[in-house]
Image (cartoon, rainbow, N blue to C red; front, side, top):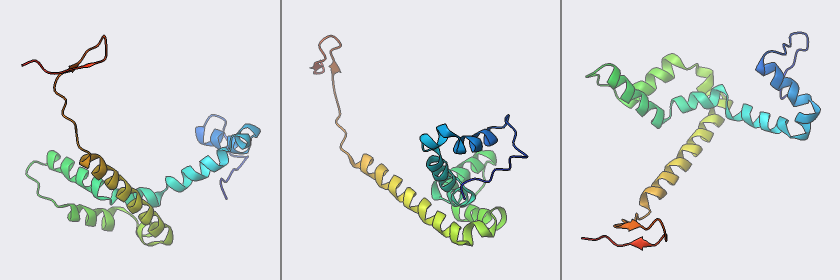
Length: 144
Protein backbone atom coordinates (compact mmCIF):
# COMPACT_ATOMS: atom_id res chain seq x y z
CA UNK A 1 0.00 0.00 0.00
CA UNK A 2 1.38 3.37 -0.99
CA UNK A 3 -0.83 5.73 0.98
CA UNK A 4 -3.80 5.51 3.31
CA UNK A 5 -6.34 8.22 2.49
CA UNK A 6 -9.36 8.88 4.71
CA UNK A 7 -11.61 11.16 2.65
CA UNK A 8 -13.69 12.07 5.70
CA UNK A 9 -10.68 13.53 7.51
CA UNK A 10 -8.98 15.25 4.54
CA UNK A 11 -8.15 18.91 4.79
CA UNK A 12 -7.27 20.85 1.67
CA UNK A 13 -5.08 23.15 3.76
CA UNK A 14 -2.48 20.60 4.83
CA UNK A 15 0.41 19.79 2.55
CA UNK A 16 0.34 16.10 3.46
CA UNK A 17 -3.30 15.74 2.40
CA UNK A 18 -2.68 17.68 -0.81
CA UNK A 19 0.23 15.40 -1.62
CA UNK A 20 -1.94 12.31 -0.98
CA UNK A 21 -4.65 13.58 -3.31
CA UNK A 22 -2.10 14.47 -5.98
CA UNK A 23 -0.98 10.82 -6.04
CA UNK A 24 -4.39 9.71 -7.29
CA UNK A 25 -5.12 12.76 -9.44
CA UNK A 26 -4.77 12.55 -13.22
CA UNK A 27 -1.71 14.84 -13.28
CA UNK A 28 0.00 12.82 -10.58
CA UNK A 29 -0.54 9.56 -12.40
CA UNK A 30 0.77 11.01 -15.67
CA UNK A 31 3.92 12.37 -14.01
CA UNK A 32 4.64 9.07 -12.25
CA UNK A 33 4.48 10.77 -8.88
CA UNK A 34 3.44 7.52 -7.18
CA UNK A 35 6.80 5.96 -7.95
CA UNK A 36 8.63 9.05 -6.68
CA UNK A 37 6.51 9.06 -3.52
CA UNK A 38 7.19 5.35 -2.93
CA UNK A 39 10.91 5.95 -3.35
CA UNK A 40 10.71 8.84 -0.89
CA UNK A 41 8.90 6.65 1.65
CA UNK A 42 11.51 3.92 1.24
CA UNK A 43 14.40 6.39 1.60
CA UNK A 44 13.14 8.52 4.46
CA UNK A 45 11.76 6.37 7.24
CA UNK A 46 12.49 5.68 10.88
CA UNK A 47 14.81 2.78 10.06
CA UNK A 48 17.05 4.78 7.72
CA UNK A 49 17.15 7.79 10.03
CA UNK A 50 17.89 5.59 13.05
CA UNK A 51 20.80 3.97 11.26
CA UNK A 52 22.15 7.31 10.09
CA UNK A 53 22.10 8.49 13.71
CA UNK A 54 24.45 5.62 14.51
CA UNK A 55 26.78 6.29 11.58
CA UNK A 56 30.35 7.33 12.31
CA UNK A 57 30.17 10.77 10.65
CA UNK A 58 27.14 11.82 12.70
CA UNK A 59 28.54 10.38 15.92
CA UNK A 60 31.83 12.23 15.36
CA UNK A 61 29.97 15.45 14.68
CA UNK A 62 27.85 14.99 17.81
CA UNK A 63 30.99 14.30 19.85
CA UNK A 64 32.60 17.48 18.53
CA UNK A 65 29.51 19.56 19.37
CA UNK A 66 29.24 18.06 22.86
CA UNK A 67 32.89 18.86 23.50
CA UNK A 68 32.24 22.47 22.47
CA UNK A 69 29.15 22.58 24.67
CA UNK A 70 30.85 21.18 27.77
CA UNK A 71 34.50 22.19 27.62
CA UNK A 72 36.83 19.52 28.89
CA UNK A 73 34.31 16.72 28.30
CA UNK A 74 36.00 13.46 27.47
CA UNK A 75 33.59 11.21 25.59
CA UNK A 76 34.30 8.64 22.94
CA UNK A 77 32.27 7.84 19.85
CA UNK A 78 31.59 4.35 21.21
CA UNK A 79 30.03 5.83 24.36
CA UNK A 80 27.75 8.05 22.28
CA UNK A 81 26.78 5.10 20.12
CA UNK A 82 25.85 3.09 23.23
CA UNK A 83 23.73 5.93 24.64
CA UNK A 84 21.88 6.44 21.37
CA UNK A 85 21.44 2.71 20.75
CA UNK A 86 20.32 1.77 24.27
CA UNK A 87 18.53 4.84 25.59
CA UNK A 88 17.24 6.91 22.66
CA UNK A 89 16.37 4.69 19.70
CA UNK A 90 13.66 2.07 20.03
CA UNK A 91 14.88 -1.49 19.78
CA UNK A 92 12.49 -2.24 16.88
CA UNK A 93 14.31 0.25 14.66
CA UNK A 94 17.62 -1.58 14.93
CA UNK A 95 16.69 -5.22 15.48
CA UNK A 96 13.78 -5.71 13.07
CA UNK A 97 14.10 -7.01 9.53
CA UNK A 98 13.39 -3.52 8.15
CA UNK A 99 16.05 -2.13 10.48
CA UNK A 100 18.64 -4.58 9.21
CA UNK A 101 17.78 -3.72 5.59
CA UNK A 102 18.11 -0.03 6.40
CA UNK A 103 21.42 -0.67 8.13
CA UNK A 104 22.83 -2.35 5.03
CA UNK A 105 21.57 0.50 2.81
CA UNK A 106 23.16 3.13 5.04
CA UNK A 107 26.46 1.21 5.26
CA UNK A 108 26.52 0.80 1.49
CA UNK A 109 25.89 4.51 1.04
CA UNK A 110 28.63 5.47 3.53
CA UNK A 111 31.13 3.15 1.82
CA UNK A 112 30.28 4.74 -1.53
CA UNK A 113 30.81 8.23 -0.08
CA UNK A 114 34.09 7.21 1.58
CA UNK A 115 35.33 5.70 -1.69
CA UNK A 116 34.38 8.86 -3.58
CA UNK A 117 36.17 11.06 -1.02
CA UNK A 118 39.24 8.84 -1.10
CA UNK A 119 39.28 9.03 -4.89
CA UNK A 120 39.08 12.84 -4.91
CA UNK A 121 41.78 13.10 -2.22
CA UNK A 122 44.15 10.89 -4.23
CA UNK A 123 43.84 12.86 -7.46
CA UNK A 124 47.03 14.81 -8.05
CA UNK A 125 46.51 18.52 -7.70
CA UNK A 126 48.27 20.69 -10.20
CA UNK A 127 49.84 23.62 -8.52
CA UNK A 128 49.38 26.54 -10.78
CA UNK A 129 51.82 29.32 -10.44
CA UNK A 130 51.06 32.38 -12.42
CA UNK A 131 47.80 33.82 -13.64
CA UNK A 132 45.36 33.53 -16.48
CA UNK A 133 45.03 36.51 -18.83
CA UNK A 134 41.41 37.64 -18.69
CA UNK A 135 41.43 39.04 -22.22
CA UNK A 136 42.98 36.09 -24.09
CA UNK A 137 42.43 33.28 -21.64
CA UNK A 138 46.09 32.22 -21.96
CA UNK A 139 48.12 31.22 -18.95
CA UNK A 140 50.91 33.60 -17.97
CA UNK A 141 53.89 32.16 -16.13
CA UNK A 142 54.83 33.87 -12.86
CA UNK A 143 57.12 36.82 -12.97
CA UNK A 144 59.82 36.66 -10.34
